[in-house]
Image (tube, one colour):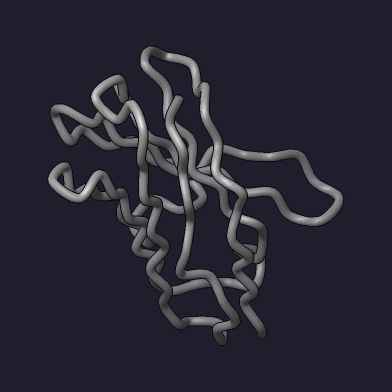
Length: 117
């Protein structure tokens, strides 16, 4: 089991920045990758960004490429999502998730990000 706790969400004006954190505990040695997802009201959950835990390789959705940066601190078992140039359409509940392989097995509880226009 891996437990995940997100933090860092909040209310920000368009053009502003936020940094989300996702702290992992438990069987963290089993983590292969960590991803950030988001779900806006009335919409399906969508992929935002992903990082391979060991190598640090990163992948992004086109909608956030160039604005968001995912990173991780292995010593702290924590991943981050730096979000810049935020837009109202970035408003959503943001979730982190991890998995021992290509799937995501464990999910956090989510943190709300609201971007006002």
